Image 1 (cartoon, rainbow, N blue to C red):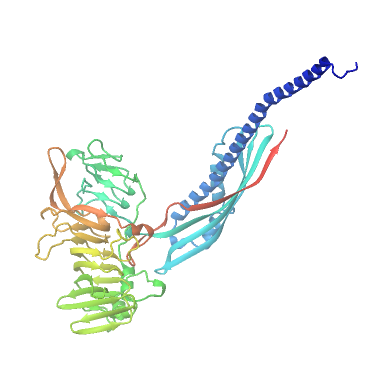
Image 2 (image 1 turned 90 degrees about the vertical axis):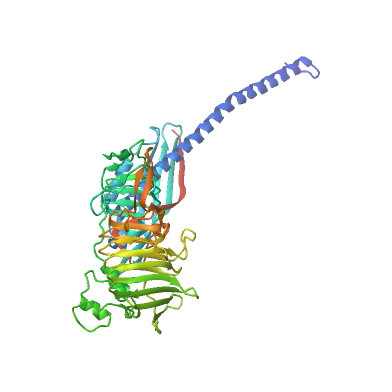
Length: 568
């Protein structure tokens, strides 16, 4: 049929057909568009699931490696952790490590049955090892491992199958240190008094640092602990309103509910206290290259030699010896003595040490590495500063004063040490976390006795003591704690480490069961947080254990090596 120009019917037909085609295409587009959108959305979601699956696989390997590393390192003495040991620890030649990875990997669930991952390869290699040696042995180790982990993830029920291969590279870094007893806010070998009677943590008790006993704790009311608490015993005693009971529990509600901010570990491993102070004695006597001290007690003959005395096998004469400073050591004192710390008008540290009628005034110029010793009207100049150890072969009958801001001091007594007044730091680490001044008191075979009095000889209220106090064979205890009148609290900044737990005071209860002080002091103990990072008084005893500061830290970089969609 020929279409003639001007025939409307024919034109209408063409228009109708064209319109119909347009409408049909539009309908098809509208109908099909949501289908395509749904597909793309589902594919994007599937890809996210696959990526998440690879992350699960990678995290499984990485977390296992980090905790395996920490577990193995803290089982060993720091002196046994050398570069070769660290190199082999996460090696594929270490079957124990590989078996641990495989066990955890095998027993970790997949994301879901259709979204799976598999580890294609992993490697950990030691990139850096640094050891710091003090005291003749390794005191600190820092390490860095670099790692590469490759994981394959798949979405197996999606058409096309989505396969994603991800490679993660990064590093694990950590610092290992010898654990120093100064780290503890409180440590007891037995949580009992010397006579075997029980001492209670009460409402007046607060500890802000780690607390440990090789024995068994006793809790009354609501003592507060703001750091980790551990005991070798699996049970604890609770006051129970005056009818004590022993429980394998953390509390005895409603009467005794201790607060444990970081938990209470019962059944913890024992930590042995040192019984002798050879290291500190040798440190006081002389300089040893790299502090490589003998591990046996020096005879009187050896001690006399270091003191510049004539040969002999008898104890040195009583006295305060300064030759030890010139030898690169500290200060050695034979016989009982008293010590007062302070500073002079130039801000330099001053030790006033008195024995009988003799008084030695030591002025320590740390900046210029000099020591001036005044004996009567005579002044001796020594071209060295002491190494921080004052060893007293006897009792320290009185110690008090202020430790100057540049000083790091450990006072060791063969027998007892008695604190007779405030004993503080010039630079309080609670105000300045980078403070240098630190003091350790170590009573080798005796006790540390807290007996503060004011200038009139009366009981001193609320004494301040800034020091780490250690009596490995005795107690840290308030003198006449059961008979002296209540006088507030002992405000201790530092820690206490002792064989037995010393009493500070006594208490009774009112009709409502609340504690009432009846004698002595309460405890207001503040932890010196510098001790957490390994800071300690010079040559202070260590536990023999290795500590990892926190968990090994990781940094990571992620690379998506390939993304494949396999069409079926």
